[in-house]
Image (cartoon, rainbow, N blue to C red; front, side):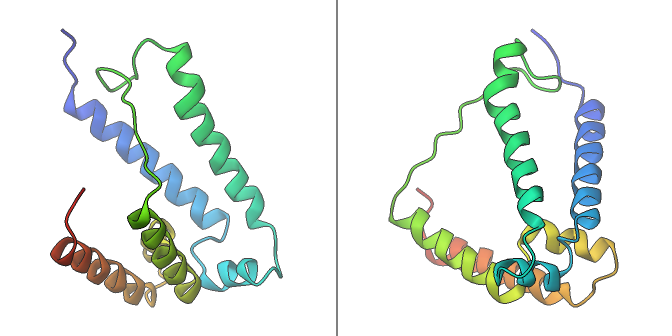
Length: 141
């Protein structure tokens, strides 16, 4: 049986997270003003960013499992079932409202702190409160 080395997993997570944060900063997704211009249909440049992200997900979930017997830092490929139910729709609506009101979603909010956008601490606070409320008042399915 293959053993996964924690150092390799940590290094790959650090590299992936750093690359993700760099991409968010470079694409201006860490600036709420940029996101709000996109949401108001004034600047459609972020469609390229979203399209690139969709392409990466397509490769990661559909192509790589067919090309590789197992992931580089894992024991096997896992299935990620998704269900479209009432909770998913409500959660997506709340997420979208938060995104529209704040101008950022969780990833760019954290990356924005890395580039010194300190007002995003309010967004992080809202994310933490929302996560606490969900965990406190709603059962996990």
